[in-house]
View (spheres, rainbow, N blue to C red):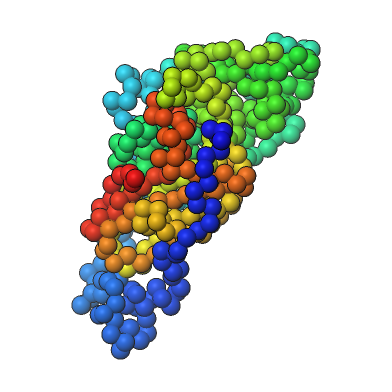
Length: 440
């Protein structure tokens, strides 16, 4: 068995944990159906509370309806409601020695759909942000090419063949602190080193074709202009396939922390390879053995050997609600939701368990299902206040099935901090509070 194809432990769904909720069933459980009172609604599982008298938030005219609100351009760029002040990127301050070489996490628990807002995309720096004047920006192609070329930002924007593509970007260390056991409480911290946006740019192949790659050119070296001089070796096959030289995300210019004015996009592969503040691409005949692919971003196995060039981010998923930062607050009808993704292709199916993996039911995939992009899943279920052990398990269109953490550790050990795509478990207690746990 290769370490990239772990045992298929649950390709077929088991017993359904709860029937899907129809509109009629929802209204009945909520005590809102036309005949609920006559049918003895009090015997049903608790639903939304029914007020004994007039709702104080309905009958009086609220203050915001009595005066004019702010004008159309009070916030020229726009910002979320002040009531959504908790929806922000967060960091774990003890994770690194300084913020210039650290990470902030996307608040996955507070988001829905599949596209991450630009202001909430997780950030990883190795030497702090590079502030680059776009008028002075230059991008170079050199090495084993027929003609070395230099491009300005305007040159890149005028290149033919511009595309828009939605891709997830996941740090190889996402979930890395969970290898030896449950540690951080919240999917923002266990899985939040990921975002999913629409990138606008030009295929890297167009630049390489213009330069003319020599027959012996088998690898490219991508280098950033930040203080860390981030560099990674990429096989020429990937460079010529789907990599992008991107200058926009979700329709606007890249954010400074995301590589403004230009970054490399390497779909489905570990985020460390998506070089920000892209400065040059050098073509060579072998990998360069850079710091970020020797002492870092290799997977240390139990026997002391290391897996190298483990570029692909395998199929993975996480339930974002309920989760520690999004506990269950109401008995009765509820909606479980989460995200799934795979660097090998598209998500084909997501199964969900409410009892720690003993029984599974297939979730509903909603919204676009695109290759190497996040996919949203939902499961409607009833909750009567019992404890739940919530899990999700993703399968992609290659047949790869997300492994349990036990299966993953049996192959990889617990020495690595990279490429942890094991199944996550949340324990939902009888009061709705939720925490990060593991099951045997």
